[in-house]
Amino acid sequence: MENVLGIDGGTYIGFLTCVGMLLFIIAMRSFDPKLRTQFIKLVVAVMISLAAAAVDMYLDTLAEPLAIRYLVKNVKYITQGLSEYFVLLIIIRDHTNLNKKLLLIPFVIASVVVCLAPFSSRIYSFTADNQFIRGPIGNIIFIQAASYIVVTLLACIHKWFDGYQNDATVILFMLFAVCVGVILEEEKIFPNCTMESSIVGVVFLYIYIYAERYNVDSVSRCYKRRCFYSDANRYSKLDMMIISMDLNDLKLINDNYGHKAGDIALLTFAEVVRSVKTNKFILYRTGGDEFMILGIKATEDEAKELVELVKEKLTETPYTCSFGIYPYKPGDDFDAAVVRADKAMYEDKSAYKASKSKRSHSRSDEFESRLETFTNNISFLG
Image 1: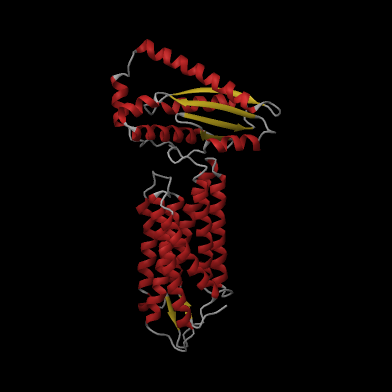
Image 2: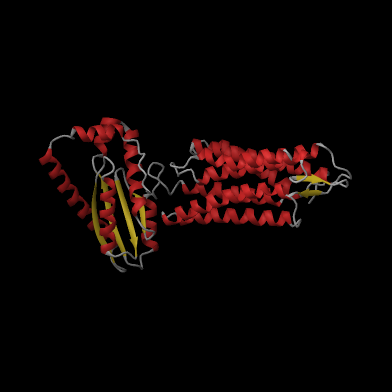
């Protein structure tokens, strides 16, 4: 399908998709505000890139090159690079220790280079009969994309071994779609296929993140209670270790320091567990201060080792936790096994309270000081 300007139907449909997606994002006010803003910026950048590509496709049909084509081409390349940067920010949004500003460097370098194209044919140029020729330096746009792909792949590996295989799979699909689009466009099989493929990837990424928020706790970034029982049913024919965990003194923290401090405690505990667990252990937040772990095909020794690692890592924080472990075998009553794990955890909590009572009826001054100054800046992956 082509319109009167000779622009392919894919570009037209892609632009309409962006407009519809933008309206949808703006309407969904319950979405995380920061993430919502990032998606709006991404979609706007894609729309500008598509518009520039559409104009460039029209200019390409002329017999002679016009000077404005350099401007249009540069707008396309710059907004493509900007959209790649926004996608990367969305993908690595949970990696708080990364300096996001450093990721701007490839984009800035590529943007400056393409802006110099009118003065150097080694970047790109147009022949007398209006044929586009990319010079060796013009490959800077692919170098920028490759650098972002490397960071994205590293993020996928991190997510995979943190137990978020679904996240990694969706991101990899998006990368695959864009890479195929680049190849098809460069081989002149389909015009403007890079951005059209990018739109498909962005739509899938948004839909997945929007749907996944119903499965992931917004504070701790752990899977919710419904996922715990869903996964239990999914792996019911396998041996599992059930680890029940309860973050000690969360009510005291909320009452004395506010719910923001409580949120920091919950997130910190979840980060501690994620930093030491292996891929076979899946972490869930099942209640206010309650967490559960399913160890798929894990042994009791492995579960005990994980608990010890968590306890050791928690010493770097002001927090403590009570634990209970119980094995599940295929054919067992899963709910009964959970009750047994909870019972073991409550016994551990009773021992903690008794020990705490013997030491003091209140928190020590040292603990109070640590809790007041703690801001979750620990390098958990160090």
